[in-house]
Length: 319
Image 1: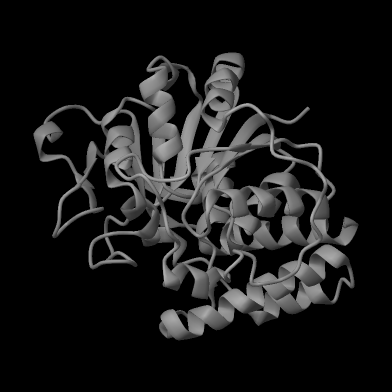
Image 2 (image 1 turned 30 degrees about the vertical axis):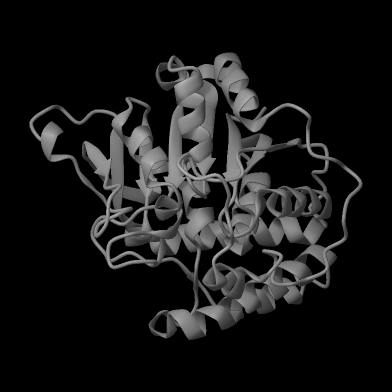
């Protein structure tokens, strides 16, 4: 039996697709559901992408739930042009992935998350790889969940490096800084896996060639996804010489925290310009013990990339 129950909260673009595959491929993980969010794509596109990828990877029985479609302070959401460029207009490199007939689950993503936390308690891991709107809404609806859940490992933020959508702000946090601040100010146990560490973990066409050589449907599609992503990175981050494994690192670190070097820090998220979306230490809680919030500052790159390739290559061999 798998060691950990996991829920992914995805705005399913390309690195979310890699995170989904990692969760399916890791023997310590029992993926019990996916909650859709907005960000790289609109929420309905993202949930469809998740359903289609689960089907492609032989896991079509895992349910997908719809989360909130816009931030906690707005009434609508539009995809940024840079997101469409990096992930493709449809979030999956403009590929035509076969649509599954499976539909999104009828229960709301927020209610599913709350119910699952009450059911599995400390055995449940949540990995949000988009904005924190859904998690903040769940905490507001049922504050008790912060004491029940095992751990939250989120991809977002930037503590020791600049942001990627402003000098101080990372994209996921910037989508809903108010929600992110509510999560960071709560007592939920969490680890922030930010740009500090994710941009050290890179894939190149050397790795996608390995997948292509498997001659399987999933290997070909995932190679196409990542090659598109690498091409986008050549425009946006040419100094990296590859594409960053943002979201899959959060999944891997949720299952093996020792991949990361972290510091405990009471944090806040600035909600006003010019520092909107900045993830930083909370000066009002500086002298209080920091016991629930950790921030990743380094990563065992070699070990993570090796684990990532071993797991995904094995998964693609079978599908």
